[in-house]
Length: 370
Image 1 (cartoon, rainbow, N blue to C red):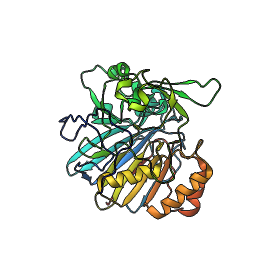
Image 2: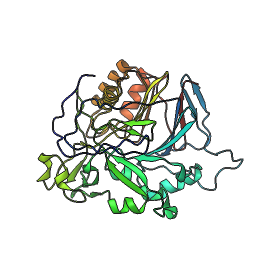
Image 3: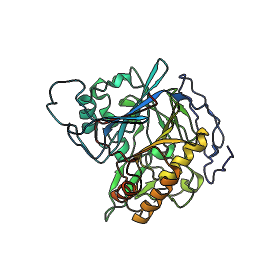
Image 4: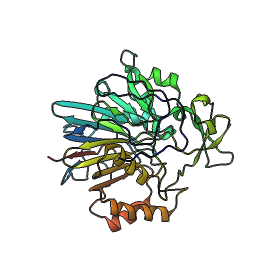
C-alpha cells in the first residue's frame, strides 16, 4: 500500500502486539501510513451487543443470511424470562468472540455509559468476564468508558490485569460537552480507576493486533468530505499529560476536540472480508472504513458495525452523502448503532434495504462463511 504522511502527530508512541502476549515498545514518530502488521484471518466472529440505545424484548425472530446469522434471543437456554430486563442507554459496548481453528478469543470493545447498565446486562447475558482476553477503548468519551467499573465489579482483585488498548494520551483528557450554557463537564478517564477496575491501558496510535485475532486501525486520517465533527472540547493537562499530546495542543487550556486518538477495531473473516467496528466515527465512518482497508490491504468489506455519528453537528446532507458512498463501497451488511442517527438509517433503508440490520441490546451477529 502507498504510504500516507501524518499531518500532525509527532509524540512518542507505544506499539503493542498482543497476539502472543509480547509487547514491543517503539519510540519515534508514528505514521498514518499503512502499518506493517500481519493481519490475522478468523473463521468466525460473533459480536454481541451489551450496551446500546434500544431494546426489543424476546419477540424478534432470528435471521440467517449469507455470511451472517442474527440471534435475537438472549435467554441463554433458560426456559424462563429473566426477572429483570436488559437495559438500554446512550452508550456502546460490544463483546467480540472470534474463532480461529481451535482458538477462541474474547475481546471487549467499549464499556457503555454507566457501570450499573453494563453489570446488569453482562449478568443477564451470561457473559463471564474472566474469559475476556483484552479490551479496546475507541475514544475518551464518557458514553464509551463510563461503565468500565461494571465489568468485574466486586470480583476485581487485581490478580489479573486486562490489557486495554487506547489510541492516544488524549483519551485521558477531561472533556466539556458543548450542549449547554455553561457547557457541562463530560468527564475524564481516570488511570487510577482503570487500575482498580482491573485494566492496564496501553497507548497504541499505530495499528496493532489484539489477542491474536483482531486489529486496530490506529489513528484515522481525515479524507474526503468528512471532517472531525465532535460536540465536545478537550482540556489538555487535566487528567492527561499535556507533554504527550501533539505540540499544537500542549499549551492550550481548552480547545475543540478533533478525535485524533480515536480508533476502530476490525476482523478479517476468511472468505468474506473485513468486519469494521466503528464505535462512534467522530473521524468519519467512511474514513474509518478506508483506514481499515489501507491497514489490512483488504478491499472487501463484509460488514460495518457501530455508531456513525451522523447527527449534530453533522447534517442530514452529510448522512445522505455517506449513504451514497456506502452504495459504492458495497458492504454486505451495515449495522447502525448508538449515535448513527435516523437520517442515515432512513436513507440507507431506501437505497440498500437488504443490507441494513437493526440491532438491539443482547443481539448476536455471527459473521462467518459457515
